[in-house]
Amino acid sequence: MGGTSARALARLVRLLPGREDVAAMRRSPRDDLVAGLTVAVVALPLALGFGVASGLGAEAGLATAVVAGALAAVFGGSHLQVSGPTGAMTVVLVPIVAEHGPDGVLTVGLMAGLLLLALAALGAGRGARYVPAPVVEGFTLGIACVIGLQQVPQALGVAQPEGEHVPLVAWRAVEAFAREPNWAALGVATGVAALMLLGARWRPTLPFSLVGVAVATVVVELAGLEAVTPIGELPAGLPAPSLGFVEPGALGSLVAPAVAVAALAALESLLSASVADGMTVGQRHDPDRELFGQGLANVAAPLFGGVPATGAIARTAVNVRTGARSRLAALVHAVVLAVVVLAAAPLVSRVPLAALAGVLLATAVRMVEVGSLRSMARATRSDAVILVLTAVATLALDLILAVILGLLVAGGLALRAVARQARMERVPLDTGDHTEEEHALLAEHIVAYRMDGPLFFAGAHRFLLELTEVAEVRVVILRMSRVTTMDATGALVLKDAVERLNRRGITVLASGIRAGQRQALASTGALALFERVGGDLPNTPLAIARARALLERDGVLERDGSVAGCGAAAVAGEGAVPADGGAAPCDATR
Image (cartoon, rainbow, N blue to C red):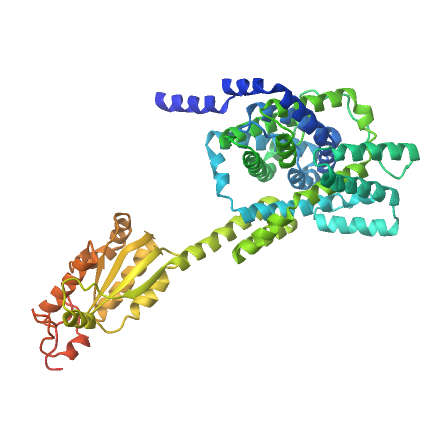
């Protein structure tokens, strides 16, 4: 018991910040300060936009960016990760708000945070490395489409239509715009989006999102465009911690949404941390600690009215590109946003919603890496199918179901590909010390097959069909040294094939069975079929020698290798297999 407690304590200590984290923050504070300020400038309009898009308001997005951003920076597993509200999480939150209201979202965030802490304690972070790249690319493409469609009502300046299905809501918004156009809102949204997209090509390091929002706000104010709706009043500061969540009796209906939010937070955060690793030299994140940090962030953010948070790939990339060296940069980003909340709330409250819609439209466009999608689609047909299926499922169903579906299809296609690698081919007998005449004579009675690759449930039945079609010979040798893996299904199929051949009077020997395959063969009774005729041999020459001994014992061959008695009739004999499993004796009268 004491040993278990000590291991649990050691795991907890490993998940907490250490001296090396503090030392890293002291090495290049100037670089981290510059990077943190830059990321804050980029993150401000995104935090506002994602807060509004989630349905809880711009203040919820800011609270998330400040609280979750600070905690994830300190306790997360990546030195360069920047966390906060994201578009992917917004997609999940919209239906939760519609069904359970703002209190439901806060409760779901808290429950998801606790689930993330449990996953970190269980060491589940390393599982993200097994998510196939086509699933990730399809997931990202689907999210980009959903984010873009979600902004259509605000970009067109129409009231939010009812409904949960994003494409349908977007279409209803277009119909409302056609009946009563709001060209001012459309102009603001497209102008901000165009400035971001064109500016990123000209000067990628400049925060054109903030420039676009600022310019749009000034233009709307000076022109007096009343048709362009502003964010509205924001609180001057973060709300005090609160425990006002849903009633305990309603928690059961929130379990599934909480699992979905936790799964998305884990997946997106770990993928974002991996992107940060790939953009640097020598940086490697701790996946379990990253889950721990995101768990703490999601437990705390709802207490201040924030929405669930994840690692943000775009903000993390900006952090790395602007020279961040440690966690200090992400921490500075959160502090700067807190100052904005305290000092500039009245100014931020006048930002047009259409401008934020433009920011998110441009963000959605920039999420789509056309070159990466093209290369992935051209890699293999299976990769293209997985990518398209995941993207369509993300748009038509929901994010978690899309990932699950993508993983299932990817797993099925991978199994099919592995099963196709398995093959069995007839190979010539090894000559050994035999003369050419003797070898030719043995080949008339003995056939050898080499089995390559895995023998498991996905492809084992093909072996059954091939084996049972063996021509009329006396002995079949299965060379199994190249069988890479075998499960119970493969062993059962092999046993069935051997029994069928035995009933036709053909003895089956095996050579080179690996140690790891013996358990499956023994548990299904297949190994006993080889052992009862002395047919479990370590190599092929011994198997050929055993086959010859059986043929000599049964009178098919003389000691000198010539055909005995009934000659060719012995080859076609169909007598019953003797009790000891040997070949049927030659019937000299035939």
